[in-house]
Length: 321
Image (cartoon, rainbow, N blue to C red; front, top):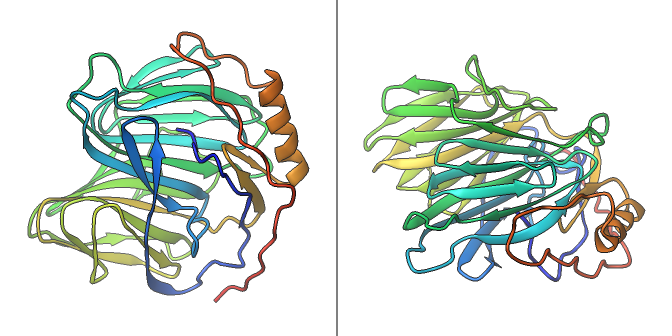
């Protein structure tokens, strides 16, 4: 999925300066962004108060939207570099096309994982015809410097491992959780898991104390470590936890995101993750010139034009607290 913000700003993310080295309960408020004609997303990362969680650098939650009489998701061809995109659905379908020639329909609880590496372009759209409801999350994972120039790739995994406890089923999307490991390719110590809780469930999920974590609420009424987390909001949890108390007042869906704090500083702008303003500037020029990112065949429409790039990147400073 693209960042369609035409006023896209440069963000310096990563580094350990803003990592909270102890357990906290920091509720993040989303920013609402229009995505195409009929889809509005709630953007949780990057956030004014929180740029990354482990290697997770971008989180959008959308729906559930009734798109029975709407075009649904319509994201024209656009470029990516230096990151992985993770597509995760609770309702609906998304048709993925990319410049490698991939053509796949991603359905609920299936992993669509695209590694942009040095450069790729893709489009995403609701198929014709499509299901009535669309509900899901789109996430980006920053690639470490050692792997950010790898060859681009697309993976579609329909059979993912699960972890179960009374009232809880956790599907491991990326990385590992409680001894189960996703088949999706990961480049840093990371975890992404879909948590399905039944009404009345009260359980504890094992965590890695060296990871930092956040929980995104997808649906229902749930408490995370005693904090009510409403759908479309996200609770940042910091580091130093060995387990996470969960309680559901109704059937609820959550996403657990975590990983080793991302040590490198990155520069993120529009759909690019790099290490300098000059690198971002070159990527924008390449996309505008039709070079490097390839061509998406079969999409009925024009590709996205890059917004104007701000002239200067600001570098915030912070300390581990």
